[in-house]
Amino acid sequence: MERDMDVRRRDFLTGVLHPRNLALACTGSTAWLQTANEVRGTAFSLRPPCAREEQDFLEACSGCGQCVEACPFETLSLAQVGDEAATEAPRFEARQEPCHMCEDVPCVASCPTDALEKDVSIEDARMGLAVLTDKEACLAFKGQRCEVCYRACPMMGEAIELDFRPKERTGKHASLLPIIHSDRCTGCGMCEHACILKKPAIRVLPREGEDGELDRFGWENAHIRHDFTAPTLPPEIPGWEGGMDRILEQLEDLTGVEDP
Image (spheres, rainbow, N blue to C red):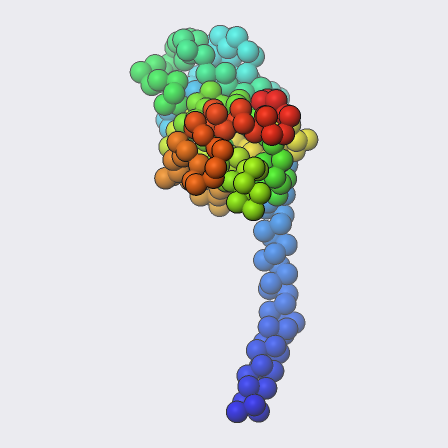
């Protein structure tokens, strides 16, 4: 019996440590790391709010630039000579300047070709999708107090919620982790723009189109919850009362850190 176990152990180790298998494992790991690093360091171009499906948008957009002129925050821009963009269609990069989700949506109102749909509410716009691409760098996941992306979100409490995770060992500490709802996220980029890290831990990726980044990098389900509901009261932790707003107030009392 012992001899059989030794044989199986030896076969397993020689199989795993075979140079060919090690090379495949290293290649796969290297490719994944390169992909992850590329996501974290790449600036993604997003379409204006209420843009049609990518192909329909490109066919309808004349590149006139009227939406660019209408934007009061100078968010949008057209491709310039030497840019990698394949067309002159308007776009924006969330880290530089996000969409501020104006109620009157002047960029949409100014579009003469209906490349931007006028009958779509700004809250139903889908410019991209926020994804927590670097959870290891995110301060909240490191146990530090940070709700910047949550507070910056125009759909606060809907597109981004805080997952309250009390630490039962102390009964006085908790983590508040950002959870993204893909069905409510407009892709405005306010969260990415507001992230205090040099390289933002949260990025807004194009949902589709010439970049195809969500499928390419496999982030469509990364750190995104579809069924999360923030608790009205934390579970069975004495002293935590009154829902999320009260939780934040009590955390300020405990930590001395004011709400961002």
